[in-house]
Image (cartoon, rainbow, N blue to C red):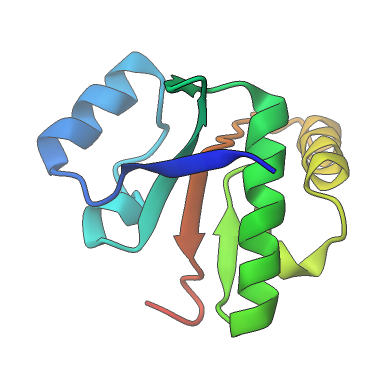
Length: 122
């Protein structure tokens, strides 16, 4: 278990441009721009922590809530599946990265990012 909080929700276009320029995001079509995404970040000892192992724990909590409430969520660690479509966030993220590499595609994973599925929540 890990304490966490919403770090960022809805963004302005200006903020998104800044994040794309810095490499923290890869798109100007972010679900943050429409209010359909949040970044959840762990708190450890009163400080924010972006450590990947903690992102997996947060993903497990969101996964459980998604299953319980039947809310279709996509996690930035596995962009091409719903969070309820796999058992382990850490294994699924590694598999996602391997599939991207095998297809000679860029691997961009974003552990803190969670968004409502575009297919269900346009």
